[in-house]
Length: 96
Length: 392
Image 1: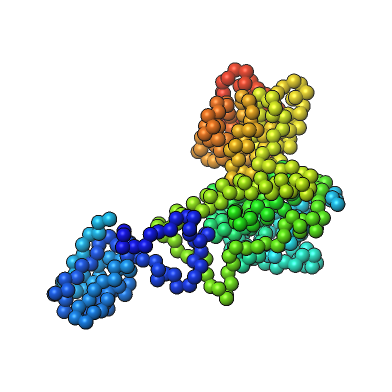
Image 2: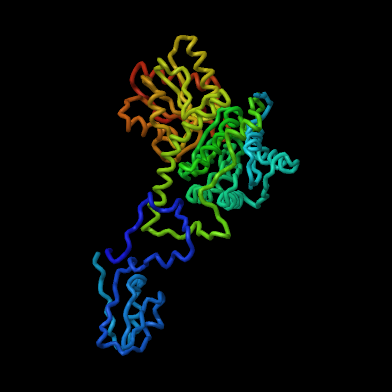
């Protein structure tokens, strides 16, 4: 859990669950919903970007020669691993 | 200057609402509450109050409109009963969850089926856990006084919770009594315009009612639990201030003849009036009986109840709503839990009475008092749950 921000307690949270500023969804790191984590073997990645196209959370990061995962928002659905034509993405169980 | 007016329970609440300078009233008519909002709509039509009266298509919409209006910072009132309250059920939780200080008059009525328009507490008890502050009045005077105090309690920044003021359908809603009313400016001084903490404002957008997942929901609900705890202190303060204004003393519990009582009746609302009259007669016969009437049902006043009970040996707890299949009905369950938590060994029996508006008569109450006294003598409770006057 350490990679995610510390969750606020009842005393610090705005009353009634109000969100007091717009655009706050960006701050909500949905990555901690993940049960399985995609791990990319970047040496085998052919940079075809199929995972980038299919990712429903826009959590694949395009780099020069291969891709990476934005673990702040990746919910671990596994679509990238399923679609990868060279099977270089492995779903590894999260241990918290 | 206090004035005496002849008002029914419904009219007393409507008159209090007028003096509280409400901004928005959204309501749908339902017996026996209809007159409450009918009178308010006349005030609005006649220009006696500067409020928006929203005619809605259902009680679900009524409470939805009230929530929206309350979020803009308005002072909001609505009223309902029975099926109307049941239809509102979903929105009651949203009003308390979004911390809207709405005040609602409820003319308590039985729930269908079978169809019945008369007074019992099934409606409010059915929504008992909706997170609202819940007050039960014994007569029109108390209904008037509590509505004025209810706005002050609800809008306090330490509370910000909705309040329901309950009157027994027909018994109070339609009976005319002498009610001492305050002057408009006295009420205005006691209850200045609402000062909301946060409002919805196009110039500063916020999100209200956003999805809240398992990682935050519990904390938001705990805020509500804490607000109801805070309400306990706020109610006490407001009662004191109101007493100095009106000369009428309120609290969490009214106790009658409890100083040396051996047996007592615990009940809500108008029944307490009859119980007090019967206790007065029995006292003349030398029987040590008393009456304990919680004014405030939520937050449940544990400490005040324990103090009120003194050295009483037996309690007959009267419930006017059935918790089908439960070991005790709602009020009795709360009383038993309070005694348990305070290590009090008091004999208890629960009387379910008055469903669908069936009268509870002085002779019914006399029988209950006498049974309680007999238990005080023998130490044995024969029946833990009695059904007053039901025919075989």
